[in-house]
Every structure is written in structure tokens, then in C-alpha cells.
Length: 131
Image (tube, rainbow, N blue to C red; front, side, top):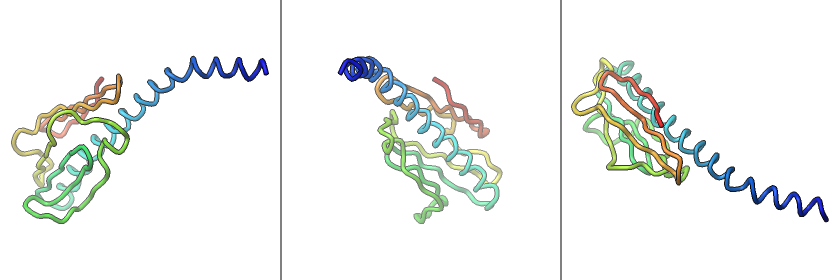
């Protein structure tokens, strides 16, 4: 009985810290998925020789040809992991050379409870994940 009581106390102490670690892992995973989707869209635009659009939304991350509805690629967005994407949905348009059109410099902020990450995207296709 003493061992069970001691185990319960230790578990109660460790549980909040475990929740913080799980939040950090989920936010890092969501940021990595967005960075990978950006690289995927860039490489697809180059290899297909077409203008492609990467759309990053709370529920979905998709790639499609500009001006066309059929999706070339899709996956669930940050909300699937319980992560919040701050701000409005973003779209990145890639030229066949792999460069982005328009206002493509962006910072996508992701959060879940106290855990946060930012995916920083440059016009030249550089993507980095920061805290």
C-alpha cells in the first residue's frame, strides 16, 4: 500500500511537467510539418515546371496548381495535434524556378498552451523554425 501511495504522489508531481513536454513536442511536430510542406511545394513546382500554391490553414495544408481546384497534395493542419496557428491562413505561390511570388516572407506562429514555435519563411525558399 505504501508503494502505491508513493507512486501516486510521484505521478501527481510529474504529470504537469509531462503535459508541458507533450505540448512542446506537438508544437515542434506541427512546425516541422509546415516546413516540410513548404519544401515539398517548392520541389514540386520545380520538378513539374508549374506554378503551385501552398495553402496553410488551421485544419489543412494543401498544394494545388494556381487557378485550379484539384489538390496535388494534402495533409491535416496544426489543429489535428491541438496546435493553434495564429493569424489568417497563408498562401505561398511558387514559380517553376522554386521562387515565391508576392509577399512571401512570412512568420507562422504556432502555439499550444505555453509551448510556441515560429516557422519563418523567406522569399528565396529558406525555412527555419524558431522559438
